[in-house]
Image (cartoon, rainbow, N blue to C red):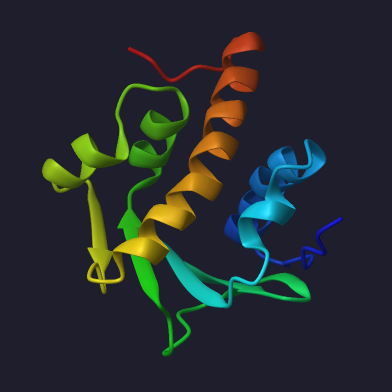
Length: 136
């Protein structure tokens, strides 16, 4: 079982819960085994969190770690669109809705998307089942 820190901020808690969806299915540990990376998620206009993947688990903390490997910036609306399937990471990137710093670390970016996208989709499915969809 992967140890995921208990953040004290709302974005960090949301990410922790998202990762918990795939951790509960046993899918998280194989994805992060021997993966020592820091990924920053920035909610444009709000704030950012740094996610540290390391052998002891995952640590989530508010702010931008200056030594990040990849930073992904997007709006809350883009996160919701990714979750409910209205867009894909490629489409969001091409439309400028998802921005990446240090994009040359393609392997890190792709692995992070492999971790976070299934979790976002689970959240989107759960929201739709409870009538909480943001589709227009």
